[in-house]
Image 1 (cartoon, rainbow, N blue to C red):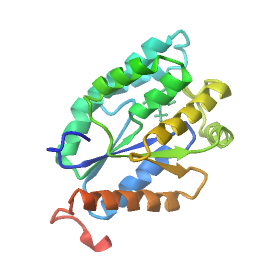
Image 2: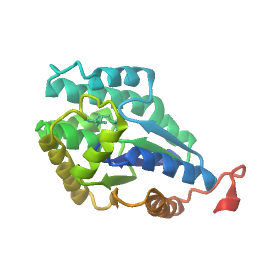
Image 3: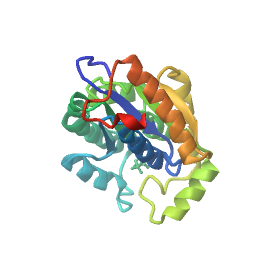
Image 4: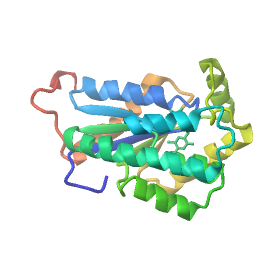
Length: 226
Ligand code: TMP
């Protein structure tokens, strides 16, 4: 997060569908709250009235005619709305804002996956995010085989989940390259490991960052569990 006048730290979770990142994001939210910090969790695309409607358009399996440029613009539109309505206000009001996906997903899926020009993606995602950046990002990394196995047990797949294995491999490789290019921001979690163990790792990283930023539990917080 660049706007240092805001109070909280901005944490994002990334990964392919079936990586377990949403489970991880929820588990971390619980851990953070149990430790007495104020935190909120949003999902992308979604989290606002308009963004949830854009989500319906994006993930509708009937929308097979959607071209890549429409896709990237809609994801960005959903993000712009979430950023202004929820993320920035959330960072003023809370110790931690967690997002289940943010702009790295656009770079991975629409950039590496669909092959849209990276300069365009970077400019667009930066505008849509109002130039804010996550302080910390957890990439929940799994093999395409494990991701497919997990997704197949979830039931109905959305439009992106119905994409080919080749597309998903490009997205996974994309996420790994993004992590390599941003070693200070992105922490890779091995998504094949136990949920609680990964939450421990994530919580340790966040705790260190909270201390560095001088963020302490509010007086009404539950300090006993620290
Ligand atoms: P979810 O299943 O994690 O809620 O995400 C919805 C789908 O949208 C998922 O298949 C990944 C995809 N997606 C993109 O392709 N680009 C993006 O920028 C975002 C945020 C998600």
